[in-house]
Image (tube, rainbow, N blue to C red; front, side, top):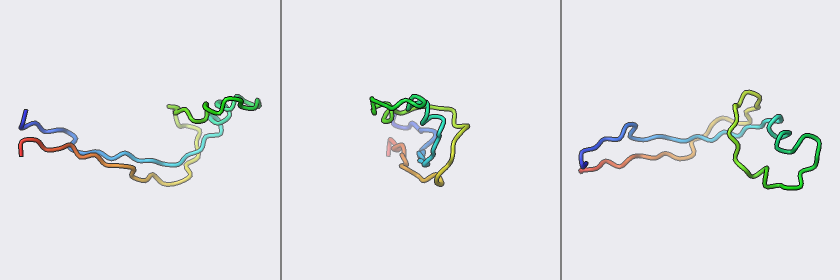
Length: 70
């Protein structure tokens, strides 16, 4: 369709530095030393209830959907 409209026409992703001692300790394995550091490099999706916000959110990138048919 050459006359299609995308809603939303653009969006912005934001990034904010945060710290969670609870998540850190769970990934670390409690009081045990971590032998596999890749656990710290893995992305986690968590409910961010117990966290400390280090800085204000900053825009990371904005994507604008192209307008077709022009």
